[in-house]
Image 1 (cartoon, helix red, strand yellow):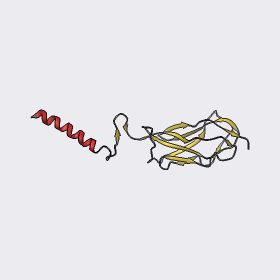
Image 2 (cartoon, rainbow, N blue to C red):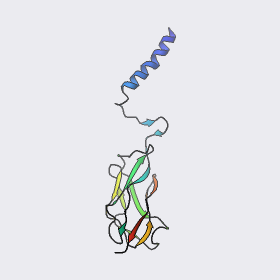
Image 3 (cartoon, one colour):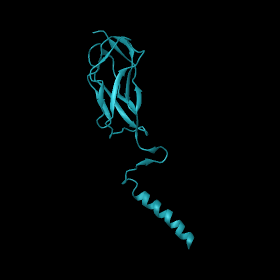
Image 4 (cartoon, rainbow, N blue to C red):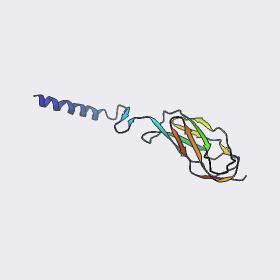
Amino acid sequence: MPTRLALARPLAAAVLAAAFAGCIPMATLPDEGPLRPSGLTFSLEPENSVAGAPISPGVAVTVLYNTGDTAFVSTATISLSIELGTGNPKARLHGDTVQAAVNGTAMFSNVSIDSAGAGYRLIASSNGLGAAQSDAFDVAHP
């Protein structure tokens, strides 16, 4: 009799877990620990632009969970800057370079670079989330 009872409990737990698998949100992941925002990525890369004009259509940075999925609940404050050693060394980034994420994404729609140059890269950073590097882009003379 004890053997039957010992087998019944794990089987019952497995059946319940399977029945409710899609209904109860998981707070942890078996191999990765708690689900938490842990990084940034450029979800809308900067495109070639003209000095002094806003980078169009804009730049977007998304907060990612440790699983690589978008952290839609994040309202992290994200800052943009020009990566040192790229583009024109005297260039400055203008506009609203600090934005709070909305639904996990920060949109930078009015940032511009004041000097022409090739191979610029932007860096997005946020406390506790590290930094992300954009693809290279060029800024032409007006």
